[in-house]
Length: 106
Image 1 (cartoon, helix red, strand yellow):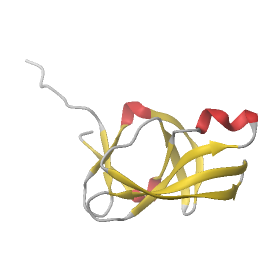
Image 2 (cartoon, rainbow, N blue to C red):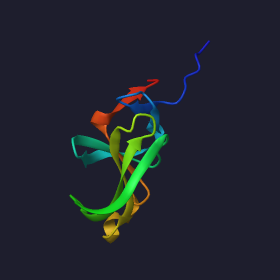
Image 3 (cartoon, rainbow, N blue to C red):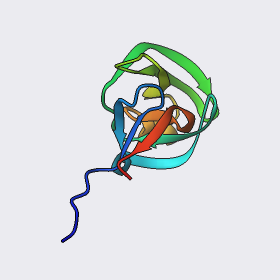
Image 4 (cartoon, rainbow, N blue to C red):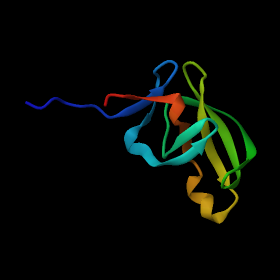
């Protein structure tokens, strides 16, 4: 009989709070502050900081830092607004840095 397997998750590297589903990854080809990062369609159990304009590698964006809701570890950011038309697909999406999340349930 096959075992039931739950969803593959990513958790905060600090406290293991679940923050994202593997199925919500849009791209693994992003760069964060500390190296590689993933673009997620959704994130959970997180808090967002104040919105601010930042000049990123792909142009000017309005972003808000994203924190683990449990331990307040900074995990990445949320794209609130993209000023360039080619970057609009990022709006409402989340960057989570690979070094800040760990795989769970794999």
